[in-house]
Image 1 (cartoon, one colour):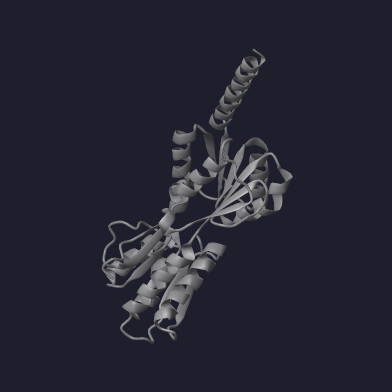
Image 2: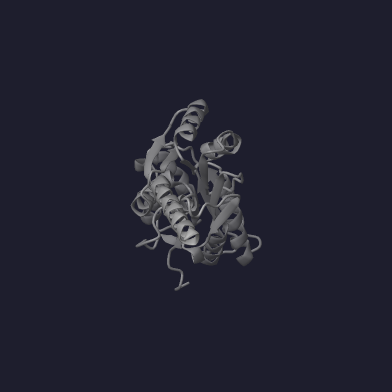
Amino acid sequence: MMRIFLALLLACTLNLFLLQGVQAAQSSKVALLLEDSTDNNEWFQTLAQGLQKAQEQYGISYDVLVCTDDVKAKRRLFLDAAAKYDLVLAATKPFHELLYYNAGNFPKTHFGSIDLSNKASNILSVTFADAEAAFLGGAIASLSQESPTTPLGWLSDNETPATIRMKGGFLEGARFINKEIPLEESQMLHDASSERVTETALTFFKRHIPVALTSGNASTVTQTAAQKNKAHVLLLDTGSTKNQDDSVLFAFRKRGDLAVLKIVEAFTPKTVKVREVVRRSWSHVGIEMSDVDSL
C-alpha cells in the first residue's frame, strides 16, 4: 500500500513539474536588441523571423528593441532588457560588447550571442562557418580572373569580428588559386549615399575587378552598378542567394533565424545548455549558398 502511495505521489509530483516546465517555456519573454529597424537591414529581418518561428514552436513572447542612439543609450537599453526579460539576444558588435561586460551581473537572465563566441555560464553562443564560405567565394573570384595580376575588390561599411573572419577566408581562398593575387579594399560609411557607393564601385568595375560585398546597405546599389557595367560581385552574407543574375559570381548568407531558434530551444526547461558555442555550417543548414555545381 505504501509503495502504491509513493508511486502516485511521485507521478503527481512529476506531472506538476512538467506542467510548470511547459508553462515556463510558454511564458518566457525574449528580447532581441538591434541598432536599427528591421526594415533597413536584411540581417535584422532574418533574426526577427527566427523569433516569429520560436513563438510558433515554443510559445514565447518577444519584443524587438531598437536603439539608434549612442553607446550610453544602448547600455541603458541592454541593462533594462536584462532586468525585465528571461532571454536577451545580441547579434551586433555594440550589444556583443555590452553582453561581454554585463551578463555576469544578471545571473538569473539567459543571454544569446549570435555570430560571436561569448562564453559565460548564462550565455549560449551561435557562430557560423562564414570564413569557410568566404574561402570558397575567394577561390571562385580568383578563378574568374583572366589575368593573374588583376586584383580582387573588397567593399564593406564597417569592421566587425565577422567581416574580419570573412575577409581572411576570402583572401585565403583567392590565394589558394593564385598566391600573388592582390586585394584592394574600400570601406564605406554606414550611411553613405547611393551616388558615393556607385562612384566607389565604378573604381573597381572600370578595371574589371570583381568586388566582394559584406555591406547590406551598399550591396543593392553596387549590384545594380555591376549589372549596368557587365561587372561581377560576390555577396558575402548580404542579399539573397536565390535567382541571382549573371553579375553575381557567388553568394551566401547566414541563417540568423535558425540561430535564434537554437538559442530559444536551448533555454527551454528540458534542454538548458550553458558554456557552449554552437557552430553552424552549411552542413548544419546554418549557411545558405548559391548554386556552385556548374563551376
